[in-house]
Length: 376
Length: 56
Image 1 (cartoon, one colour):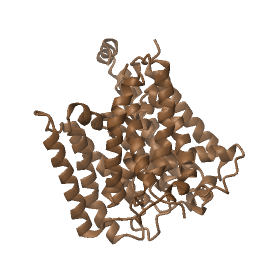
Image 2 (cartoon, rainbow over the protein chains, first blue to last red; image 1 turned 120 degrees about the vertical axis):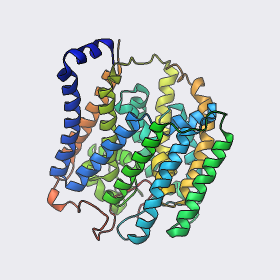
Image 3 (cartoon, rainbow over the protein chains, first blue to last red; image 1 turned 135 degrees about the vertical axis):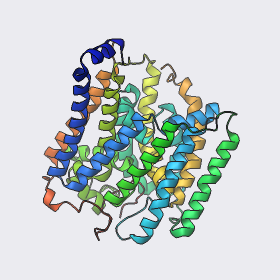
């Protein structure tokens, strides 16, 4: 908050409260509007999305930043919080999936050559622009110009990646491996503990504590992700919705997608005709942007100046944004759909995604300064 | 000096435009045909699309 606004708030408290109240009221009204016009479930999903955005921006929690902190400074706190959040979701989701398998589904996908390559590229690109699937949405909502530029290309990449998905999976994929039941939960939790132990062992001295804000973020994210599962019947995801936005745009412009192996498939073709306000991942994506905006405006963070980046940085953002979308489709999800939701619902591909994307992150961390994106 | 206010407003305005255009292109919304509030306990199979799912 600036000195001027602090002074104003002290003199006229309502002047500070009213805009903030209006922000929250507007976000809630948007959810009520969707509930009234599309259905209560869709309004609730938008509200969950707003919750994701508020949590991620409000508690400054993400995925790309903590990975970077571990690689550059051997600070594992953020990744430990991610693992904690995944573990909390798993403890509840595994029994729910076992007892309500007809109503709920996990984020289960096959491991394959394209999946591994896609995760590697995603890991690299999310370090280049410092924004993952959810992070790009959060950053765009809070006015980060790099993410704002990356987002439309992320959307396009997701559309084209989905369009080519079956060609890529045809290069070689193993059957879907999904852990389930008590045994699956124990194996998943043991895996999370093993990774956490490895990170703590690798951590620099004095870097082994998780800040309270990250613990809160981990718990809140877990609660919201479980809400997503219970309300939608599927785990939290991001990239399907983004590809759908471009596919709907293409259809509106007269492109015939009925011959597409992906967009012409019955479920996707039906979704192309329906409003985005009835698509699960679109609603939570929209909510994330709104939630991040609300927090940024609340904090007066929107008065921050825009960075002066070289042209090559903007060019790199465009390419990386496209690759984020394309690669995440090949990888059957981003940090949310594959890493967070895949592992927390027992999918082997979530673990493989984590390893491949982390390897890619090492490359991305080194590429970022070369591409002129460190000047912020 | 340009601030994040500009870019954040562009983000929100783009989102608003996307939703408005989508409402014009898509089938009309019908809350009476919406699925139950919660998938859990609804007795219905999950019908939403997810990034981890292959097309059927």
